[in-house]
Amino acid sequence: MVVSQPTSEIDRAIGEVAHRWREAKRAVAFTGAGISTESGIPDFRSPGGVWSKYPMVYFGEFMADRGKRGLYWMRSRDMWPAIASADPNAGHRTLAEAERAGRLTALVTQNIDGLHQRAGSRAVVELHGSATRVVCLGCASSEPRERVQPRLEAGEIPPDCARCGGILKPTTVQFGEPMQVGEMQEAASLAQSCDLFLVAGSSLVVHPAAALPGVALEAGATLVVINREPTPYDDAADFVFRGPCGETLSRLWSALGSPRP
Ligand code: NAD
Image (cartoon, rainbow, N blue to C red):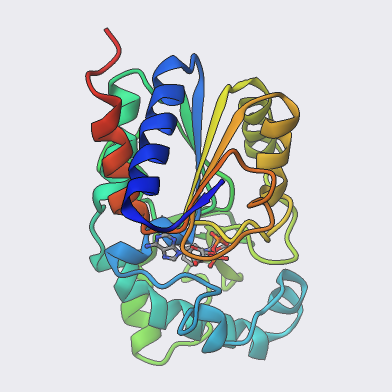
C-alpha cells in the first residue's frame, strides 16, 4: 500500500504500522542517504545530489590513477563541510529513542556520516564504512578525516600519507570495492531474523545492500518503506510512505505510544 495523501489515509497507515511495530519482537531499521538530507547532507540520486555534480570514481581507478584519485578527493573536500557541520535530525533521534526503549533490535545503514551514532544509536551496522576517518593503504595508519581537510583546502590533492607517502583513503566502501564481509553477514542475519523491516530514505537501487529488504520479505517480515520517491520494492512492501523521513518516523513513534515495559 503506497500512501502519500490524503491525510486520512496516512493517519490510518501510521496507526496500522504502529500496531505492527508494537507487536514486533525484532524490528530492524535500514537507512540511506535520504534520512540525512534533513540534516543538510545531500543524497546521491536526487536532483542536486552528489552524482549530478561529480564523476563517479571506481576503486580500481582510484588506486591506479593519481588524476582520478584527485577527482575523488575534490568531491570529498567539497562534501566534507556538510558532514562536519551536520547534526542528527528527528529521523535519527527517533530511531535512537526506539532502540533505547527496546523497540529496535538494530539499525543497518548505508550512510557514512556517523549521525546515527551521534543521535545515540548503539546497535549500528555501517555497511559502507565511515567518512569520519582516513586510512593509509600503505602503512595502515589512520587519523580523523577533519585533519585532512586543511591540506585539501590548501590544494594538496590528492593528499599522500605524511608518514610513508602511501595512498590515503576515507574508511568508506567505494564503488567497485568489495563490501565488508562481517558487516554484510550481520546485516543479512538481521534481515533474516526480524519481523519488521523499516526502510528510511533509500532509493534501494545500490546492491548488494538493496537486496536486504528482499531477504526480510522472504523471511516473512512486514516491510515498511519511507522514501520521497518510488523504489523497486514499492509493490512488494506492506506499507510505503512517500513522505519525509523525519516527520514520518516521529509520527510513527508517537502513534506507537509508551515504550516497551
Ligand atoms: P540515494 O541517494 O540513492 O537515495 C536516497 C533516497 O532518499 C532517494 O530516493 C530520495 O528520494 C530519498 N530522500 C531524500 N531525502 C529524503 C527525505 N528527507 N525523506 C524521505 N526520503 C528522502 O541514497 P542511498 O539509497 O543511501 O544510496 C546508497 C549510497 O549513498 C550509499 O552508498 C551511501 O554510502 C551513499 N551516501 C551516503 C550519504 C550520507 O552518509 N549521508 C550521503 C550521500 C550518499
